[in-house]
Length: 635
Image 1 (cartoon, rainbow, N blue to C red):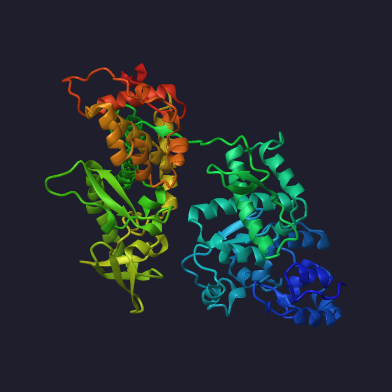
Image 2 (cartoon, rainbow, N blue to C red):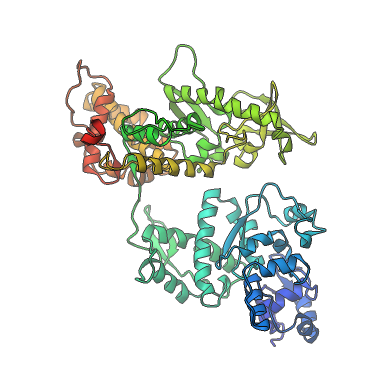
């Protein structure tokens, strides 16, 4: 045992210097034998450490010599002890009947549903704190007396949408939860959180196979993990450099935080200095892949996107007519959303979290495009941005709002669904012209105000207005129950549509069309670049000097597309979103196609389609249907 020589002790230093195993230290805390940290940063003072050392024999006797075990290991012990077959789920059932004591590692453990612990998964798992955190004490007696659990979690900084990671032996690491819920990680975009926690699970599973937890990793183990993840022949799911770099970025964030807090003895992610694009010195992980692709991006030409949408979302046959057995549930919603993505170039979350008051409306006199404004709280850059949508697309969304959306709301009102929601903020007034402010009142009569620009996705889901028959969601896209359709759910809609295209068009077209929400954004960028080049450089009749002056005043087409996409760096637009055309000379890109019927030098959809078709022939990753289908389809 080491004599105390420090002013304070971290969660690794304390048990190490007191000669306690980590599980003994954790159990001693749970039993109240070691108090909670009394120094900022989750540390213990020297006085607390000295007191524990003076009582170390008593502590050891109280915590015992065997660590807690999870459900799977408990069942293994029972099988060995009584020489019987013990099936999965037995431990949970014995605990439910009161025959097996359930010991929780911390307050966080008490919120994990025990039913999930018998799912058979042996690796690390991620659970997400839900919006509604009720305590079913009648179904889970172990939670009796924990009715105020959500309040306790709030005080600890655990909020809805935060991830909770569960180890293979069903424990929750308090330090890991502190990182996930109380560090800069908590401010990341929801999709980034999901990607990073998936990466953590992979590395933690790798360490678990070596009988180690995350804060015991070394740089050698990270090197072994990199080999297994990217090069090992025995791994059937190897990844490329780009995917490895994303996971490495997640691990770098975690271990830099742990190193600053002294939760690890040494950071396993070794760093090196490199010169950045502008000459500055930046630090990057040594294990960063050098062969990473600049992008793995795919595009669809407009006619291919139309084929994908008609077959996948509207239920058309290969002959271009609606299928007789097509049900068409929420067809107008799904088609309207997909059209809006392609027409505006918005990201998935940006378009999916729109409120009805943010969606532009058609007006008398008409226009080719209508503009809307994205709130900073929902954009990736956290800056407001203007988006544009074609008039037919805006009309299609209006049709959805007035038909199936209105029907879903009426059904939900009739069944009282909105009154049963855990939280509703009824917007009573929208004030302001340039900067709109939402005045609202919740179920308890509490009144408040939220600038529309500050309303994030979580708050937007709770916003309602008073309609003729009761509350109505302000959230634009609703499910069949009349409730807000979550942004992540759109991935499944697109995936299902692509599967239907694969089924219906197999053997009909040379390349089966598929699409994801982000591919619609890529395709918008490609289309807009070609159109802007076509209009600015060829169809406006400008001299070279006039074109130069035009670019100095308004910016070139590349920068226009950058602004439409909301990219902070032009390199992102050029090298990732528009890689197929980033290296093409303007005269090659804009060579005149065959003249269209009627002549004319104005903007022509046929000319742009011809340009896109030629680009698709010369580039990888661009989907474009053939001019003719195979004979079987045209017969």
